[in-house]
Length: 192
Image (cartoon, rainbow, N blue to C red; front, side):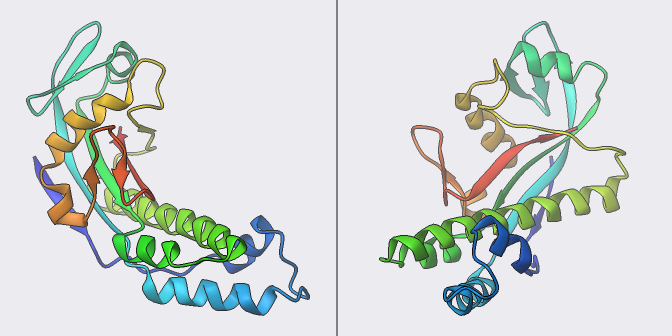
């Protein structure tokens, strides 16, 4: 599988949206503090992603082989029936932002840092989508992730990560024994 690492993702956080989501008004006594936290996050964040183009080798009633790697899921097999090319990916807000967010002892600031980190991982995911659209012209993209489809369990992270190679070295994301990703503000899946 041909893989691409996106490691120069620009971070410009949606300040107005974050204020709304965090329910902080521009005239609030907390407004200046939130602006500072957002600016700090922008300077610390180093989101990255790895993605590639893969091909459906074989497909059965409840399995799919992509570039020789088996995925077990009836629903995934149904969704990929008419698809020959797919785009596996992992995107992350980065280890730097996770370390920064964990540094807050104040509960409110820690909550803000968590929401801001979610916004950064969205930026990384959009960077993957933009790259795929520019490079492959796939038309409308839809994403499927292990643990989010009814019968594509979280354990299917293992073959996805096997397909993508050494994601920890490439973008700093590793899979735990319980199939969770570290840093926690990371997403994975397959675009079709």
